[in-house]
Length: 140
Image (cartoon, rainbow, N blue to C red; front, side, top):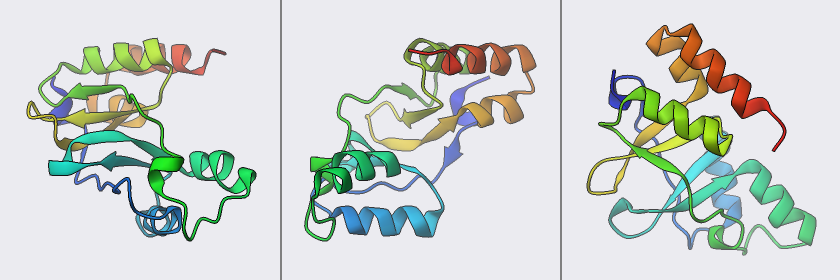
């Protein structure tokens, strides 16, 4: 089974030059915690989470109305390709201890996001999702 068969499509991204307040507002309206950060041509530039906003901006006293996404985002994000096998996505999640993985097309444009929940529900493979959850949940 391929990642494109189980991923969540239509993932939205934020731009590095948007304000953290705009990003937080988008998170609220989409009811999500992580947002991919996309630069030119929807190329992946990083990831921004609600926790990033709190820990890297609010806790440091930055004004989220003017601070930019690039100031709080995580760069060097782990990703997979939409035509990768789900076992490869699960391996990356286990190895990096992450619960969500950005999915790119072969032009390295955002195609979606695959979560641990997607692997559990969509593949029906309890061994795959259980083993992945076990590794992801271990202390780093």
